[in-house]
Image 1 (cartoon, rainbow, N blue to C red):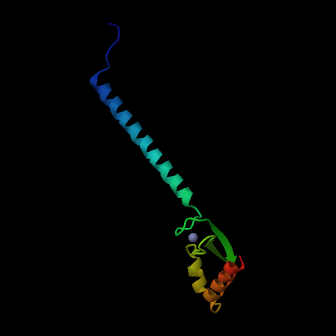
Image 2 (cartoon, rainbow, N blue to C red; image 1 turned 90 degrees about the horizontal axis):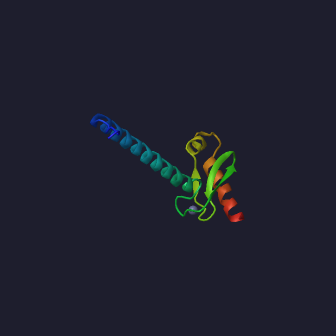
Image 3 (cartoon, rainbow, N blue to C red; image 1 turned 135 degrees about the vertical axis):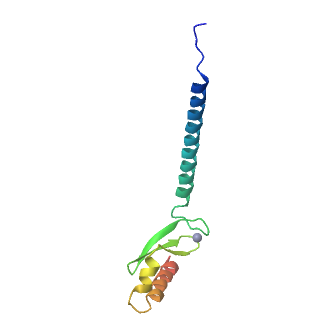
Length: 104
Ligand SMILES: [Zn+2]
């Protein structure tokens, strides 16, 4: 017999390494799946799933659903609207958005 059996220590090391590789592969696969799932929802209406389009209303970016016409503000946009000194800015923006909806 010329073949020498690896020692138990080497077996244990190899098993640990395989388990770690497997764990890393699973984690990478899970991450890729989560990424794909996120991309599927990017710029999609959370209510009905149709596409969102970004419009510029008085310099404020508002995402609007092409189907149910729901309106989404990005973080900070609603806040900066509220801080502006222009009177009734929210009413003006919403009126502009509503006009955009009925125009379509
Ligand atoms: Zn929608």
